[in-house]
Amino acid sequence: MSIYRNFCRETFDASGNLESIRLHYPENFNFGYDVVDVIADQTPDKMALVWCNTENEEHIFTFADIRKFSNQAANVFRNAGIGRGDRVMVILKRHFEYWFVAVALHKLGATMIPATHMLTVKDLEYRIKAAGVQGIVCTPQNEVPRKIREAVKSTGTVCKLWCVQAEEEGFANLTRQMAAAEDRIKRQQTLVTDPMLLYFTSGTTGQPKGVIHDFSYPLAHIVTAKYWQQAEEDGLHFTVAETGWAKASWGKIYGQWLVGSAVMVYDFDNFDPKQLTTIINHYGVTSFCAPPTVYRYLVRKGVPDMPRLRHASTAGEMLAPEVFRRFTERTGIPLCEGYGQTETTLLMANFKGQSPVEGSMGKISPMYRIELRAKNGEPTPVGEIGEVVIVPPENGRQPGVFCGYLNHGEQYDYVWRDGVYHTGDAAWQDENGLYWFHGRFDDIIKTGGFRVGPYEVEHVLAEHPAVAECSVIGVPDALRGQAIKAVIVLCSGYAASKELEKEIKDFCNGKLAEYKWIRMVEFVQELPKTISGKIKKTELRQRTVEN
Image (cartoon, rainbow, N blue to C red; front, side, top):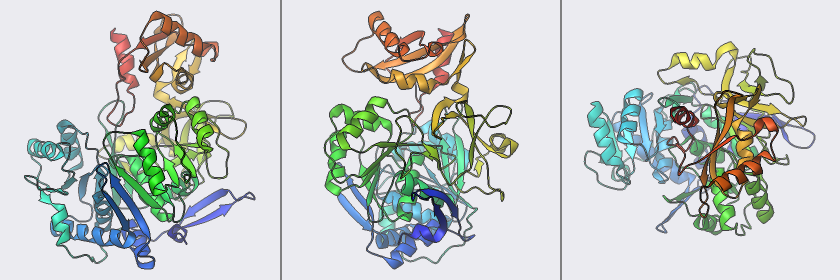
């Protein structure tokens, strides 16, 4: 029986679909001890992690292995003075050591700061100073140790440095130290309200904000894994994400292990859709989750047979209808879209038992009470756009929602104004109870007295075969207040021209209401993005004003 049932009570409707879920856990709940170690005690040979890389190396780890190696890592860190409340940055790409280090830090009650290897020295300096980092664990690849040395030196920070798999100047070799460390550890004192994770969000404006989650966070991902991704007991789940992003927490460790599924990890740098499907078929992946970009590549290259794959999900950006249709036609598996934020777990999705509707975020997660509200705070009726807000339970505690912004208490208070959490995202609900994403409230275009969400125009624009990437913004217009402008990166084989601009406008405007028509088109070589791949609409708008 999956261990997740120890921590929740579920109720189901007459059709067997999840209706409600209520979490319960001790005040000292700790994923390392109460999930990993308990599974290792009960079923030590149960598969936890299947790992391979582009060099054809392979490792398969059981829960007994994860317990052993996490204990060794925890003892290394503890002997170096790392303990409860200390902040440790972890830059391990997709290396299997990430899972040992993450569980080890949880066991110690330290706050883990996952980060991507793509960070520059300046990025590292900002994070190290903002978080008061006391330790860093990193990959030897991509010049990460050099960048860390420079950042630590320039900030004057004193912290412990570890590198895996290799000797690096100024770093202890964690792999060697773990091999010599004791593989047992006495349970350390922690509380479920302690900070467990700190993610720096790559906002589209300003410096990244540090989002803090406490030790209840893994349990809120039960719904993510079981009812959206449909990870199965003794199945193998594969989420395409580097460990530096929150998506890894959504799909590569917590919810999957809680519901009894092993995790598939493919350690690569350059995305190859053919190799990805080879991995899926070779290891018998049963559930798969990836951003729409991955599905676009798969569809363009021709989706091969994946006979053991039973479920596919996606989130993070716009999914073109053509990609949805072609993937489903080829595999027989509908793509289940989901929605959430770094500050939360899964908020809405096409859940198990529902028939996914192309382009819809699906329905509200039973984990949350969510409403759409107008600016005056009143709920918006069906069919009208409102802001997605989370209404906390009566006791005020909502597992899965972040517990603070690092060094920005005033910003935290602002998003929690009026007793609810304001996501800043706009959506609307249809007559069937399905929710549809409308864009960030900051990005909504006001044109000719109408409000237009960029997403709904981008959704149509992405269907044109010449469009590889796109972003829609509002630009100043004397007649309309704002006019709708499309900024487009073309697919290979297409060249910018007035004729193509007209073709794209006609294609889209023929499918859109007149007030949503694209009035301007700009072709670019690339779109400005944050380090996590989010398009910087603010920068696009600023460019237009300056030009």
